[in-house]
Image 1 (cartoon, rainbow, N blue to C red):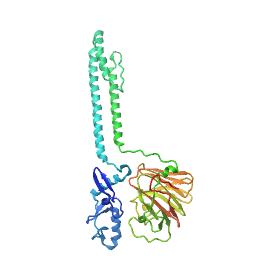
Image 2: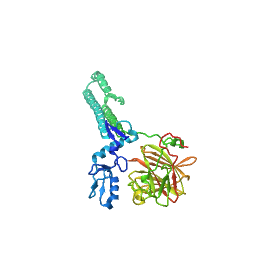
Image 3: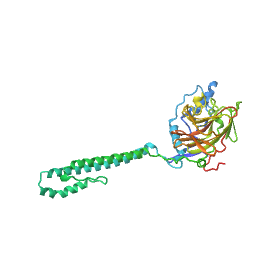
Image 4: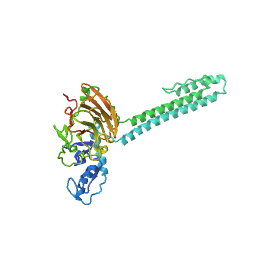
Length: 407
């Protein structure tokens, strides 16, 4: 049954907003003249393959177009897909979401009410100050008897200017009343500024959730163990999948795979079928040549040179390069040489919401090799790049369900 997400009482069928080429939610949706919608990159790649025929067709209804249509973004679908994506993220599952703009407007209304209340308090204190000054001026020329007669009312008035956080000490004969009043005003202004800052922080920090601390032991990491299978549609032709698409082997002879827009043609690598958006952990074991253990956005290029589609060589992927005698971390084609014990098994920990990606050398103990703190803007996919004849990858110790025993 198709998955349905509900936002503010509106039901959205996931299949309606899915691309029939990549089977995922539409990204940069465009609609052909026959009425079918696809991801911009998916339909472009599909039509690029048909350029040599001179005739372009709809993948669903097979209607042909001559010449190749010019595609424009479907703005309405794009907005609805954004809503669907929010509902699929783990922190929004099962409850209603409110647009940030609407929530901010509500918070600003509350802030304005509180600001006006504080401003009114200041104005009331200013009135008391003026009255106190008038009384002081009135007794400046009076005799001792008149002063003592007026003292009770002056004392009561000065007490009325006190706040729960303000303490005014009257000076002898009220000669420093003006200074005390200025102090009162300054402190009230400080209160206003502090309240304003606290309210502003409340508004800007809305929807911020604190992630639990990263585990310290392998047993702790395995609570977040995540089963990963490799996607045959992304597999390079020099790679062979086996064992339920959980093992990949580098093959000298090209494999006969069908054409697919998701298939890597420039680099010998493969992506997982499952997307990663929460907290998860998996392990990679290999033997033979070198390997890059990576995570990447789904819109990483599938063709071109290494810096365009290679894991770690662009801003759409992060990779740990494991050679026979060294480790290197790669992102945006910037290498970082790492130190750590050599092992044929690497653990990967991801906290997507917190923007944490960690790589561990796994043997009898777990040794942190590198940790990344960033902001992930899209779901991630596990990736693997092999180089060297006979290299194999095996992550049979990865599970899709949390709290699953790993032997």
